[in-house]
Image (tube, rainbow, N blue to C red; front, side, top):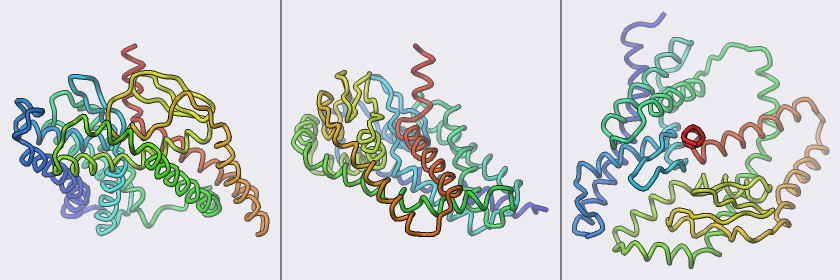
Length: 325
């Protein structure tokens, strides 16, 4: 049975990391505005507008598209998303989540705090998306922090499957990051040319670069999609895949200068995930075999990759595009 003080502690365990990360993002935006306020590129932007932009950037980490006069941005800064989720789990573990009442309180607290932040952000920010994103954050974080979980049927085999597949998942993540670093080396000239078009000073360059680093995990997901042949889409329909892509206008952000030429068809890259999977299979064959757990683990990995792909491009944005079409 929950006491009143425990309910408050659980709610604060979700609200505090949300507020802390939101204030941090807003302060960074205000710092950037203060240091570049004299730039003619800012036009009539005020510090209040810069603060609201910080709130919208924070909401983007939860999947709420950032809507501007020139369109909307759906690419999630997954590094910021991971930071928010990690802090929330840490705060909740200090309280100890014990039952479904705790989960409900965490979910409602996440939705409420995200909704308040939406009201303090750019007017175009979607309140519904913010509420859903905050609720998902609170629910997922409380599930991760729930140490005394009931013994559900099938949980043991899911855990065994994940233990078997975790090394392969870590290897694929490392390969993806290596591909992003390779793209950064090969596309540095294009990215530098795009960055020069913004006419930023040293301070603006540092802030601009740090902001784009928040999207590094999303780029890693794109890299994995590229080498597997599944591909990914940027902008109004530009498709990038090792099996071939198509041209279309894309946003002129420096980070997009790292993207490969859509006309290229380096199908030989498909051997990278194939060899990775074969190596894992050979290693597993040298150990006691548990084919059921291995199959379950493979399914978990497929689901994880699919979810990562949806998070990278913001599922809500895709739904909005289809609906408006």
